[in-house]
Length: 187
Image 1 (cartoon, rainbow, N blue to C red):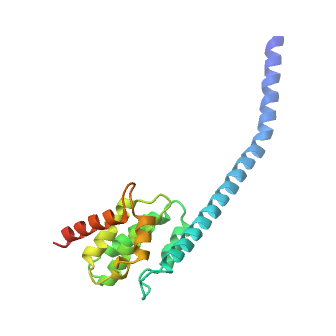
Image 2 (cartoon, rainbow, N blue to C red):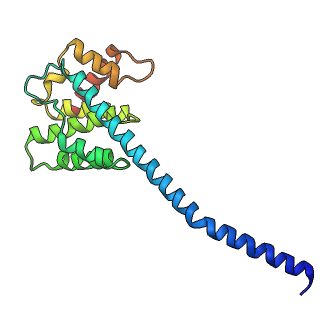
């Protein structure tokens, strides 16, 4: 073997031993860092869910609903907390299944629809269009349910401002549009 080939072989063997010895530690460190990061993300997410629940409770402390219609569904919150990536969608899908089951009572189906609307309006990236549509659906399809949230009040107007208005829209223009849409749905 020539002198250059011998040197190259020694360099390759030294690099292989050096990197080979470092790799298990590097892999373990990378995996450990990833695990710690994921745990921090889970904790942050759970904290954000708790904050959102607290905010909802604060917002609804002044609700005109006297019979707990607008209370938080604890099983839904548990699913949302435990499944960071899919929880909200899973809960919405389950609620939608309940809503569509016409063998259930109107108050159960209306409750499912109400909670879908709330989740759509309060998720991390709210879908105001879906939330608005679900509230209009609730108003039109279930005339004997959840009327307390639709009654004229400062609380109602504040919730509309906070959760449902689109850019450039006012509470009055929202209500006018919602009334027209609800009337169309009722016909």
